Amino acid sequence: MATVIGCSPRENVTAEKNELRLNSTPYLLTAEPEGSLGVKAARESVKDQDPVVVVGRIGGGLNPWVQNRAAFQIVDPSLKACSDCEEGESCSCKTPWDYCCESDKLPKAMALVQFADDQGNILKQDARSLFQLIELQTVVVQGVAQRDDAGNLTIVADKMYVKN
Image (cartoon, rainbow, N blue to C red; front, side, top):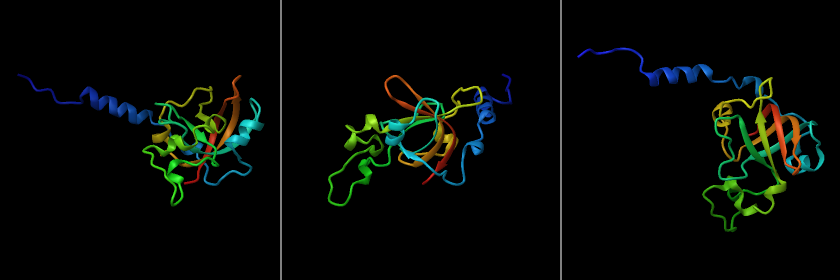
């Protein structure tokens, strides 16, 4: 019986994935941009294709991430996640980033953030690994607003500052 020594297919796939890993540096800011709007204010005031700077916390659902894409939901900082409860308040939530305590306010306080390449395609790497993000982090994103007929706001971002 012959023994084959060399790379297994799994090792080759891992090497290919590492080579395709995107560099987050061009997208990250070292200082917070001025003039940011909360998500609610942005939803009320910005028009389609307006340049915009928006601040929000990552969340708004059980899974605020778009799998294998540099995209995620943010929520207006005025909304309270269950983990923000003050002493004496009754808050017990396994996923505080879903804002279950404020679910009635979510529809008008959320936006989708997408990072796109020069051709307008969403970057094909999960935002959690690309930017080292987690739920409930506060981010300030800079980009262009996209509005749909239902009034939803998407920010096609080219820069981001991570506050915490």
